[in-house]
Image 1 (cartoon, rainbow, N blue to C red):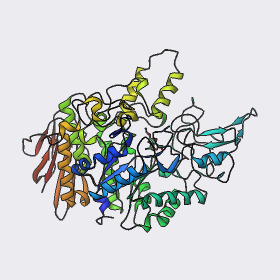
Image 2: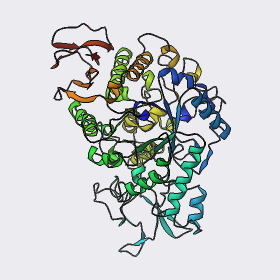
Image 3: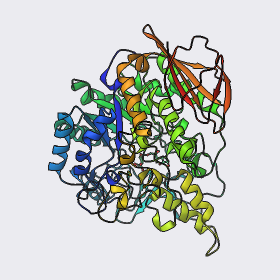
Image 4: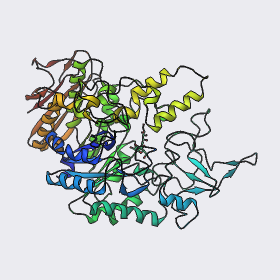
Length: 567
Ligand code: TEU
């Protein structure tokens, strides 16, 4: 799978439309706002924009609960605005990838309304009769806990059955075993492809097949009736067959190849991932999660911190890259998205502006020189950080709000909740959903109205305008890096090899082919470290986040220093 493909070389930029740019003053980003910034994205070096959901939605989960797959969310604009966005993007050479959210719909979708009423779509969702408990009472069909808290099952008084929702109660899971459901999904894909979209990011796509026996899952938390986790809900036996059908019916019919990336929580190893990716397999890339799980506890306790070592990160990401190149696979490279906090806050330091700038650049070099397709999340290119703090009233995300309320319910009335808000500040999803800080004007130049979510406290110092065209800024560093990656196929296709795998301070590797060798050196330490580079002929230094003082074999690396050499 090392043959040249446009989607391997592409730089993908994820747009979270609600928080990108508002042009109407309603406080919500919109499609015309995205169109107005397309040249900014092109100048950054972007080839593809991926739009998080823009469809009609009751917004219980920020658009990941869709009530009409063929309609635009009126807060974001109209279908004419969408057509204009695609036309303008194509005109300047950008492709547009849509979010395909088809594991579940909104409970307000007409399909679900019909299903609930026992109409012709009665088998389009996953319905089960109640289990009768030992006390003769009706009970949920099993002990599965939902990702956003509580049971995976909700009783419908109308239908007198339970429906399954792996996520929020407002997000019933579609029954993919029903061939009509699958055909309806293929039709949705055709609809958007006909409208000019260039591919799909597929939301929780390995959740479309469940364990057919719907067994109780092992009890991990004695205090809970419903057990949190992915087991039995994800990676069911039909995931690959259904995706193969999608490939045969839709994807394979399109030339040139459309862009496909599947979001797959719980695909934990490259061995599992490769099943989706080899030649003749349905997807080009997956978003696996292991590196995102590294700094917090698993499952329901995911809001709690976990200490981690750099060698663990090398084992995960280095492990994926090495396995992929030896087994005909291709990786996705991401450090942020709308579900993850900001990487500079998470893996480095946002307390000190100078260190933050160095760290943002180091993480950028680390990100862009990996083996895979690069996915940037909006705002990452200027080193945006998490919010400094949250109050409960400022929160918008269902996951965080449910978490807060669940803990609150276990404490006495009026108890201190600052620890929970601190966890949310560190790991919560709203951090990356703050609007992009465009400039130092009111509301960070995002809206002339009242923003739907607060703007970042630091927008007066950290914004696009103050970095654009400025030598040495994080934004300029990204631009330079993306340009370099485009001009050097070795950085895309070259062999990946870890260097000094055992170091806990420095993440180093080479990318090499017949055209040359790149050496990447990244210090993840906030203090100066000395590192013995095992490679003698390092070559010429071509990028760094410091004015490098070249020494001999032993390198002295300043806080978060990174270097790129070329031989
Ligand atoms: O995310 C799936 C997913 O695994 C996340 O719920 C993740 O576990 C969690 O956010 C970690 O904090 C996708 C979308 O990206 C997310 O925004 C949606 O809420 C979810 O699916 C349901 O559609």
